[in-house]
Length: 435
Image (cartoon, rainbow, N blue to C red; front, side, top):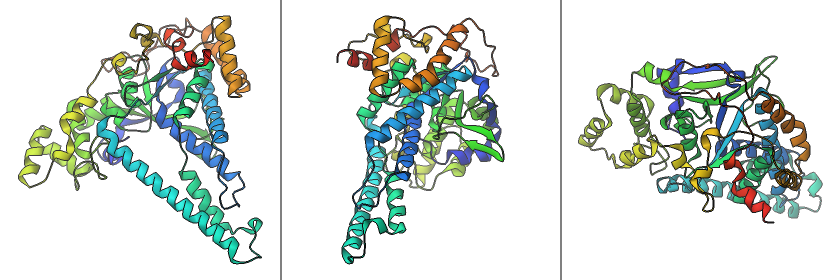
């Protein structure tokens, strides 16, 4: 989810709000990771890698989704090992059920995906037709143009099923990585975790995290190599050294540059268009970054802008501004967690959520069983376990504040202890233990 044309707004009116910082800036702190945002990027990459190495000359040949999922989970586990190596505590947040206001947006995305599937089906029929046209046409001689187009459509048709998410949650649990499920949008819970000081920043490419009030958003992580920077987001996690550079959006700097309150900024984003509004063109047609900015320079509030537009005969009902304001309003993080029926709110100790190793024999065996189930024991032993031990040895280390004061605490000086009750109470743990 994102705000329409928001990058243009930043580049034009407040480029100073985007800062380049070494990833080691966040050593000793928690990052709230917009799970669905990153999961989709890594799934797309896993799909592409399998597609590019698969024999697709048979017209109906596709890729094995289970192989793609295994690759996806393995790469995410490796990425978590890199964060732990730097001393960062990763906290994944997964989307819950979508809000009704977002159903049309999701429906539109599903329609686009169905169209891509139709394109692939048409191509397969063309490949079959080519084989039947002449006896000399054989599978091994399938024209390159067909294979190139087939890979293109297969790359665009990656998917994350409910079972895939459960498998990933199991794997994260086994590796000692905390994972929460949001009531609705993951970025909403992520942003409020940062707003109250539980985490230091949100890791997400979606700008709407700023509407939810996160003071700091990490949009990209780049590794430094000869010849320039190379993007890491959504790619293999084989390299993320301490000198890796992350792109951080500073909300307080942004508001200072445009001289707006957070409330005005949210209203501006609503006017530009967001996913909680109906229609393929979010917001009001013809009103994007620059025109919306001029309107807010002229008027002090969204209601005045709406009145002016309506006097000009423009229908503003599409904005759904009251409902959107309520969604973007600050809320206690615990109210945004999707709690399991058999796991009371008191067990969700989100303020002290930490990474950690198993502390009982039964839990150790449970985690090993999960790792073996997904063939991840080698990755855990190589990428995760040594770094968990390193963090636990440094549990009394204090980390000074590295950002300017913003009215809330972004420090996570609390000791990095064993996995707390929230992680132990994950539904994935209970589910597998009953097998």
